Image (cartoon, rainbow, N blue to C red):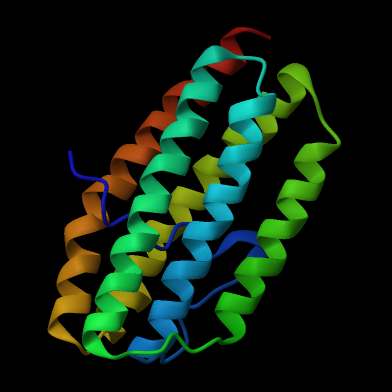
Length: 173
């Protein structure tokens, strides 16, 4: 499966909802880049601090996939001559990501693993909702919309993988 377009994970984390907003392509681009970086930051921390090998591998996968997507998103924005436009959602994503990493840094061992994976489950579930209800419907550029549609299965795969890990961690309790 191609994960090169994973772009907007976590749009609704920390109670943030973009579903009621009308957003433009430049704002979508900012959301995409910010959301990817948020998941990269959490993944980089988890890849080095997770106690469970499966959690570490998943975290490294998130880093790899989301860095690749940011590259793809930046290349598309450059090609389309779209400058990402910060907005309430992109700013909230950045703040929420910083709070998540700060909270994770206070944990260790199994507690860290569970908190990271629980967050990833919520993060990826909410991005699917945001993709379906806001980002895809509001994208006006054909290439941007096509990218968002193309990457949707990757979000599903990440969510399912995170849920599997979450279930295995609960069995260890």
